[in-house]
Image (cartoon, rainbow, N blue to C red; front, side, top):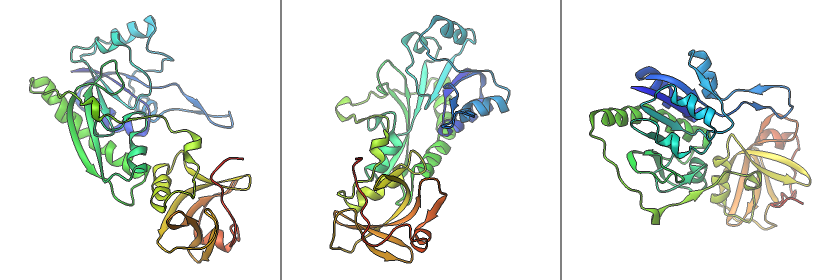
Length: 312
């Protein structure tokens, strides 16, 4: 089968690997290169790096809507296009181009968490399960017919990195199952129930600020949902402190929300709505990631310090 792949982040790699190893993969489409924050280095997407390493033709269009891009993709005569976290809207004439259409490897159980941040939101909401959906792409936002679904448990200790890896690893086998059914004519299509749809948007920096008026469970879930990136953070005066890991503490304390109410060998404890959280792994501006014990020993955080949940 002649295929084209569209994807960008690390999540996409196992889907890409499947097509490379099992189909006639003719082209990889990925987003444009990024320039790092200092402006002195160009960062390739993981998908582009894979394409270069395996000598696969690749394309990085600013838009899929122009005639030149459409004709170039058409010249590869794809029978199937597979998308996994590409990051751009696909126009109808491209959807209609391949014999078997375009299928999308989506990192949730649709129709829950349509949109751009499904893994983040599964963790933010404390879900116990999530999974992969392979669906046909139509002109809506993750509204196409469902072809295959596979569930996975979310462990209490999972964060964005570990859950993304779990789901990515599942995609190889689920794509194999789906494409074999497509080729044999045994694939079934299930309409989504739009009444049950939950749509999620891109994560913004403001979403990552920890508010200690939340419960310890909400704070814990927020920290793991944004670890390693874009990373939850707290404010101490004007200083932004990134938070990579916290521990839930059941004990009730006197004091303000966001106040350091106890200093322990394992890290400072901060009061929140229904108890407290211990800071276990943080990064101060201009410093390396430090453990809770490190910041206690270095007196980076003191008893009575207050972290704020709003930018000034």
